[in-house]
Image (cartoon, rainbow, N blue to C red; front, side, top):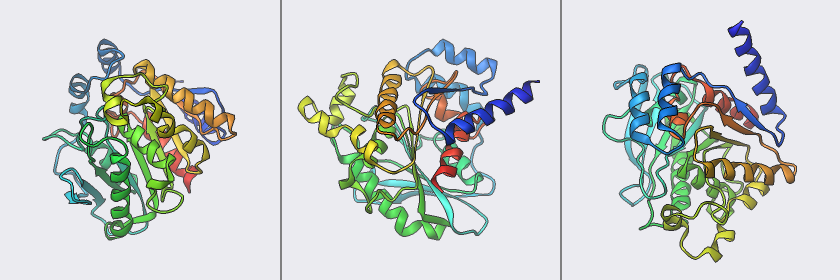
Amino acid sequence: MRKLLGLFLVVAISGCATRPTSAVVEVPSHITPDLAQGLAQIGRVVAPPPTEKLYAPLHEREPYAGVQVRRDVRYGADARHLLDVFQSGAPQTGKPVLVFVHGGAFMRGERRTGESPFYDNIMLWAVRQGMVGVNMTYRLAPAHPWPAAQQDIQAALKWVRENIAASGGDPSRIILMGHSAGAAHVAQYVAHPQFHVVPGSGLAGAVLLSGLFDPATAEANPPLQAYFGKDTTQYPARSAVPGLVASRVPLLIAYAELDPEDFHTQSGQLNTALCNAGRCQGLYKLSGHSHMSEVYSINTADKTVTNLIQQLMDRAR
């Protein structure tokens, strides 16, 4: 019976993905009882270390079987203009490319720290789904405020478009994925054409996980001000919402049930604006997940997020 229910839910979610509405779709997770208890104890906060402690044992460690990794590839002049490229050992061409932009409250964050399995886990999942994975870092606030990260995404995508074919990737099939502050940066890139690497963005799709999309309505705090500035009169022009409504890039918009409230509100506001313009993309609430578990769970048995990414890729074809 449980298997039949699971199949029904997958079909139902798939149907919502192809016929998006303004309603929030609550996506059932595959979180084990032990993990669910641990996440509930952590609560509705952004807490990487305790969440990593829960999820790190579920992930593989280097060397990764069947995967080639090139680290610290330079895409620009700054010390943080680096990316890692993950590809299958099998010689193939024309693969979709997943580019990941990490979070970190605009002021910190890395594509990988020490021997942590994060965010190699996202790249490994991409390779094992027939993609090429690209994991990038970018300049941080307060030394590099808006629009430094969008300029860095532009530079990284330029590198990808010019070089990814050598790793088997198709530069016309790039999915740009961001989490938290990374989702805000991806949204800003898509929304503001002056940052586009080519007209129309150069993307086949964009994944926005637990992002902040409008600084004018987001909770005012030091990290937000460090990136977008303290002059709030500039915020409307720096909002991603109008540009996302005007864009034709397919979007995946999702947030975690245990996210802090502002991520729920910001995702809902974006969804409402898109639907009011007749451009509903679908909004997904990841049941049981937290701000960090939604990305730490990728490449485990929990396919809550990755099923949605694959549906986006189907729409983006």
